[in-house]
Length: 104
Image 1 (spheres, one colour):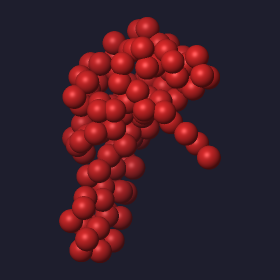
Image 2: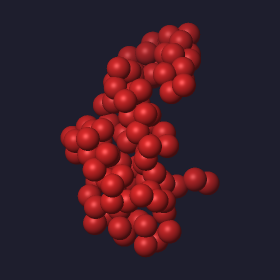
Image 3: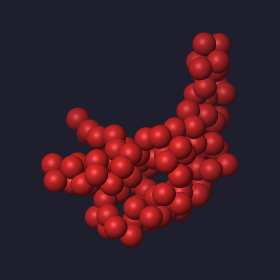
């Protein structure tokens, strides 16, 4: 089963790298500085890829996916709690398809 340890700081990234992890969850991405922070990490951690997570909007998604050190992005706008509670599967499917197209 895939496992993406969560990191926030360069020290945590180093520990994960020493444990042979090269794909990491960056949380909370927005509070840490978003794309600018990921760009600064790319300069130091060239072999590490990230999956940023935390309140990333549909508008921000292409920016994150355009970074060379971002493998995937964790988002909540595809299936917000109210849509799940209302069983709005069609709306969730529509948002998921739209989000999948943003990475192309």
